[in-house]
Length: 245
Image 1 (tube, rainbow, N blue to C red):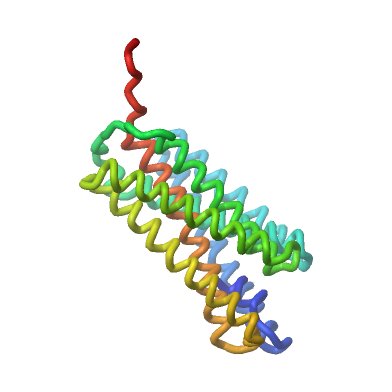
Image 2 (image 1 turned 60 degrees about the vertical axis):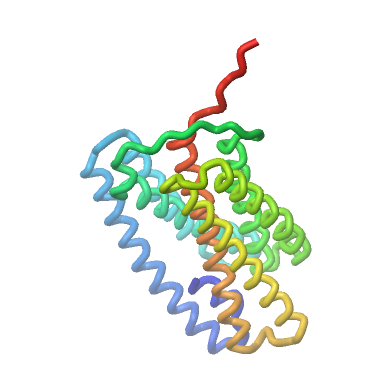
């Protein structure tokens, strides 16, 4: 959020202040990530804990290294921050009380499979976040992000409809799918609001700064939820039964 505030703000004095906030937030974040990694190493409750610890350390190290001016490096820096947030969200899911209980298994009976749809949704959201980061850092124009928003929002509605229609009473899949669609709806609204404010020459106002930061933060949340839904589907949904000839 502080990084988005830097790229969305106008005025050198405001940008300098927000950059200092961003640097301080990065320091605190790095310390927390290091503490989380140490906790994962010490827990040692499976290979994935060790892999998760190494992965988040690698991502945060790369993200720090890319924190330099420039359209390409700035875009990569923002994308890695999104990936890091999703990774920490996934770890919080893996270590939650609900994940420790046996899942309520259900069988997929639709086509395409929910496993494919959820993975594709997460990938498309990641691409869309990348377009948004590229636009903020002047690496790409606004049109890829605008067109991508229509495609991704429609795809997310399809995925959410598949999950809620197939498993309307599942204790974890349905609430997560509903949350996914709701957060996406908020994201579309925030994106349209930010775009219209740009057209109305309001990019230098505090209101635009707030909308832009909220749009970026909610975009990161959208990606994190897409990853968590994909993980939950892989855990709880069995493949479609093969028809016998």
